[in-house]
Length: 582
Image (cartoon, rainbow, N blue to C red; front, side):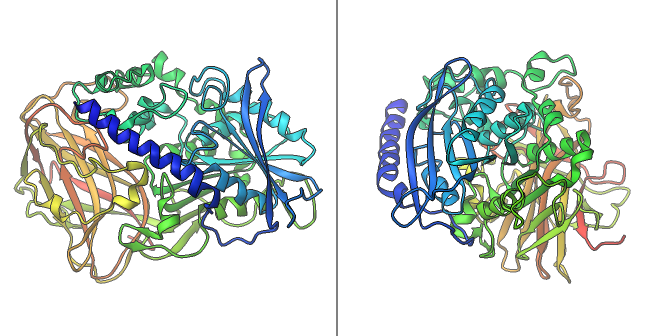
């Protein structure tokens, strides 16, 4: 019966997607403030581009055209996007993307990767993208409508195809702008020892076929979690392989080493704009890519840019103009930022076609939510920030002052059959749409809330966020989730960032380590990063719980968790504050 209901929902979903594909997609436009250079677009559909082994990949081309829809008659730089989500499907709206680039002077090339949708071959994620990227660039650069220069863009898996193509070393590739993607699959699938269930784990489940699967069948409450895809009747070898291995077992872990593609960064020598958003699930992996690139290729630092906007994975706020209830400016959107970067590399006023040896302006731009401005620097984290440590106190306050020698601990009972579930039933890829008031969550007895005093002045936080929470449990394992929230004077509480640590995975470098009931452990929690202004009159808040389902999978051990606050086991949150000197 459960599958019948899911299948009925899927039938309605598919009908909506088909309707959107044929009725809405032809008229969809990307949010943009950038001017158009060409009034019309000519589309060349259905080219099957051959790879070196004879496999052919479906490719559509969008060309700049005059008012009669005739080709412009000149050669253009190409913008290539290689992706696994259907270049003609409504989900990724590639026809709208193609029109965006063509109207701004680029020959836009959209391609289904090997084994997906209209392309031939076997779909094996990550395996063929270096060679297929090289062969596709080779074909594009040789076309009569291309001036010999190829750029690439896109987010998620089609950011991976950019890293792979750049590593191939094709001389026609001029620049890339990969967004919302890391290269170490373990980092993308597990955070703090917990499976990223509602995002990348679900993605792995959905990669078992040539097209989209019925995601309504996947029940994130199914136990054991490793059998979720099988229970849905949609077995996924990729998902099972990932779910079975929550811990990297060191440098000799053959499985995770085979799914760690950071070595590609050694061969990336083209101008690169790495971009993401504060509310993207893959922000930690994206920032890891930036840091690795900085360390591996410091000689090319002036050819790199890092841009972190207010967006989620689907760039939802580009379309609705809000992050929760916080408005964002009407200035440049995600696609405009990529366009500006690509134009800087490819369409300079002097007509030169040589790749620049360095780019102008600051290397790092981070949007500050609540302030409607961009914070700029040449380094990440920004150099004009200083650490602020806030302590969790026994009276549920959050203060910069040191804790007393003895302070009362706080406790909550964790029940895996009734976890705190702020994300269940919500689309984690469109997180900014789901940033609701969290006061209902605060009424749960298994959610502890610590509040600072109302701020007397604005406080701007830009940079990484970490927490150290000293916790003990009566069970053989427990999760500690930490959420940073902004509490408005009217009580509205909005999420800023959050993270998790599973106590048996308290040391990321070691194999899972048993927990001794009653013993306090330091849970080091990575909350990612943010750029956010806490306004005067607002309070900084911290939530502590045992779950944030189904962003992460549930810990199946029931028990009482104790959070410690005294001077010896001080629990605290660390922020980076702009302009702070001490």
